[in-house]
Length: 264
Ligand code: BT5
Image 1 (cartoon, helix red, strand yellow):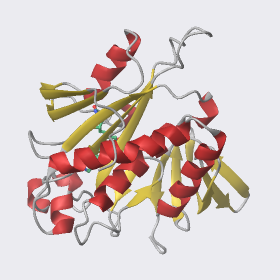
Image 2 (cartoon, protein in one colour):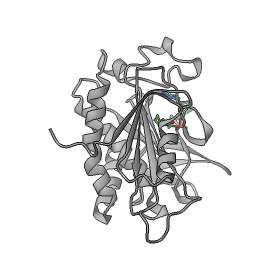
Image 3 (tube, helix red, strand yellow):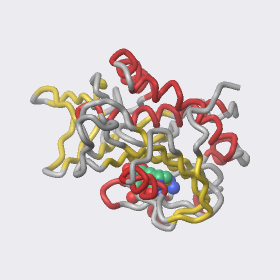
C-alpha cells in the first residue's frame, strides 16, 4: 500500500468545523501536513457563509492544512489538488457506479446526473500574511463527501432533494468511511507534491480539465457584480475556468457556476 501523505491525523467526535480548527492551528504556527477529521460538525461551512449538512457518523468530513509555495493567482490549484485526490479516492474504492464522478468547477464532485456528491472549501488567512522569510502562508482545504447519507432522497432536507447524492446510493450499498479516508490520504501525496512545482501545477490543471464536467457545457456564471452565460471551453494553467461568450472569452477566477441545460 502506498504511503499516506501524512500521519498527523487529528480525530474529533464533534467539532464546529474542521476548517475552523485548522485555520486556528495555522495561525498558531502549525506546519503543512496536519489533517482534521470529524464524525460530526455543528457548524460545517460551505462557501460564502453557506452551511454543509451531514448527520453524525455517516459521511467523511476532513480538512488538510497546506502551505504551498505558490502565489495568490495559483491558489485555486489547492482546491484542485484536494478535489482530484477525492475523485481518485472514490474511484479507488473500486465499486461499480463510482467511476463516473466528475468535478463541477470550481469545487463540487458530482455524479453523471449532476447531483452533488462532495464539496470542497479552501480558506486562507490572507489578512495575516506570513513574514517573507517564514513558511509559506497556509491554506486550509476541507472536503465533505456524502458517504452513507443520504440513503435516499427522502432523508434530505427539501432544498437538497434531487441535488445531492451519496456514495451509498451510487454504489448500491454502504461504503467504508475509513477506507475512503485512507485512499484520500494516499491520493493526496502526489497531488500536494504537484502543487509545489510549475510542471506539477500544469499536471493538476490538465487533470482537472480531464475530470471536469463543466468544460464543454453551457454555463451561467454568478459573480458578486452580476451573471453572464457562455460555454465553458477550458481550464487555464492556474485552474481558472475559461468561458466563451458572445463578446469574447472570459476567465473566471472564483464564482458560482450553474450548468445550463439547452432550452432551460
Ligand atoms: C461547499 O460549499 O460545497 C463546500 C463544502 C465543504 C464542507 C467541508 S466538510 C469538512 C470541512 N469543514 C467545514 O466546515 N467545511 C469543509 P458550497 O459550494 O458553498 O456549497 C454549499 C451548498 O451545498 C449548500 O448551500 C447546500 O445547497 C449544498 N449542500 C449542503 N450540504 C450538502 C450535502 N451534504 N450534499 C450536497 N449538497 C449539500
